Image 1 (cartoon, rainbow, N blue to C red):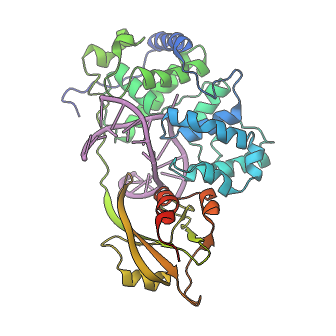
Image 2 (image 1 turned 135 degrees about the horizontal axis):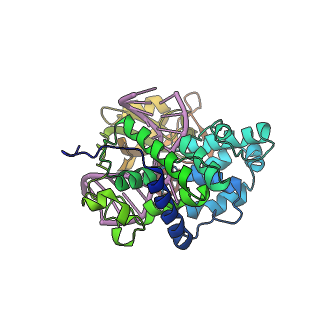
Image 3 (image 1 turned 45 degrees about the vertical axis):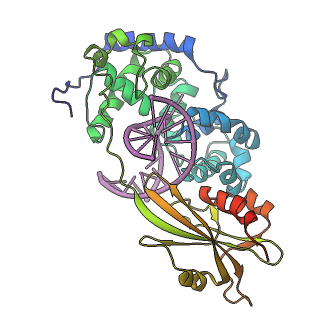
Length: 365
DNA sequence: GAATCGTGGAG
DNA sequence: TCTCCAAGATT
């Protein structure tokens, strides 16, 4: 950390009141127009937007909310729909466990909360996929309760105004942020206005890089600014090491032009999503011999390759085309589907390209 | 409790 | 191109 760290102290009550009032005033004038910011707020649309917003930029959430909310206008609608239907709408968003948890949450809301999104933090925490932040966000922003929230924005704003140059990897830093968030929300006038305003301030003004201190309503109270440390707080986290892995994806086309697709395992990367039959290897690319043996296909032909990067892996995709083995004893995992049926499946993102772009371009029998 | 879970925007 | 990280949660 910095050679001269500032000691973290609880925000005094009068300072907290002053800061909260400035945030509320600023937010009343500077709030973005977002689909879920209706008056009054719809609790279900708010929950949808909060789940979507986990580790996802707000602009992308705003794009997706209309389709999701019109397809599932209430928890009950989603509770009665197949899991695949929400997964399909989630395509390309990442963190697909959010979609599966949301489906379970909708059923829990239907069965245990009379179809209404609960308002108490303790009840919200019972919903799968709803953690401390999301529970506090719904309780405060929708139901105006004095619940603290800490997301990336709030953590950054608090650390800066307090000049708290703490190790982001340290668990104590998290506790510190939650404690300060609680003191601030205790001192504000409207928890709904203040909490959402604090996040908005972090998103628009107190940004990770090049914060717009000249426009900030808290600049005079900001200790990082006073010490010209706003660019060093918070300190960056260590990047996660990425591992290379090889996937051999095989486009199998039958005589009728249908394409083989299989569902991925329920755990791990792209859990439950669909893909072209795939072999994975940590060391090297699977050989044609391994592929034909494992997948029970014939006439294997190379059809391209590309690199797909995720946070933790560099996935080298080796694409092949092939025909089904005849007769069928070895006939592979998955099922033959029309291109239209495949397009409607929740596809693992790289397989969207493989099955919808590369497959039509490969030769057919 | 460290590792895992995606994808894309912004600089 | 490369880094950082986004309205975090789960195991």
